[in-house]
Length: 363
Image 1: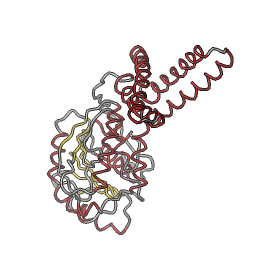
Image 2 (image 1 turned 90 degrees about the horizontal axis):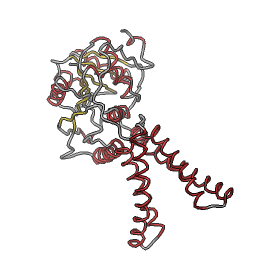
Image 3 (image 1 turned 60 degrees about the vertical axis):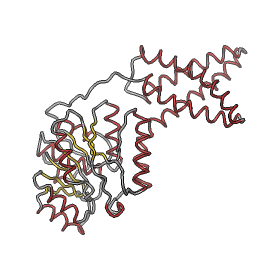
Image 4 (image 1 turned 45 degrees about the vertical axis):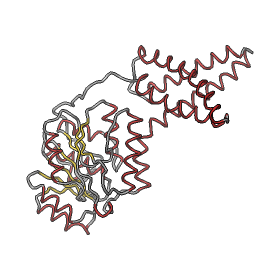
């Protein structure tokens, strides 16, 4: 078992953590902290850690992948527990996650916080929002999507290195990919520790929030784009067919058939891919389309009665049906059979992130 600690401009708490984990092999990745922090990393070495140094700051995700590459090359077959360098992960919790990784069949074990007691408002709000969006997008519940204490069995290291992302968004991308590929995720409750109001965090609220929420919202944005495209095609084709034929009902039916087929194809291949089989997806999509039409009429009529305003009723109706449509299509129409937790080949080659300094490229 190896404990991997990415560190950027750490303080003495990194050294104390390394000392408390002396019975493990420890790999620390200095994410371009600079010469001012040389003494801290020298002390970590004296405490027993192997220290890898990046020439400039590349981000937490890149630092983690650097560590995974080093472990795969130098210590093949070793499981890994990732912990933060700022003292917010207790040695006992790190040991508990390590112990669970050694016996589980899951692709990852998350040390999850319950956010009880004194928790910075930013952290509490961010985790609540991210947890809700993650469940909406994937249909799976993860109670702490932002935890940095995570355990990985050795067989998943290549998979980790193949996942894109160099900064704080990387760990969320791992969860999204695990959900998409139906890999098992286990949770283990840990202490909720925030030191000095989490002042040691290098998280940049604006830039890093954009990075995190971009992959999380990607499928929702794609679903909205697909819906808008279908609407535009439906409207344009309706106008064209009415002009050419003069028959409104037939033109409306033809336009809706074409636009619905387009929407189905885009959602099946792009929004909710990998591709679900037509024999299951097509009848489900058709049934949902009919149900949506009936629900649209019923909900619009009910909302007009409640609000007394057609614009308000229309807005509420469309937002409600958009959300319901996304959830139903993800969970039912384009749902795939559960595939289990496939393992990569045992002899996977070392994973080397692009741009790794030559000194770390040894295999």
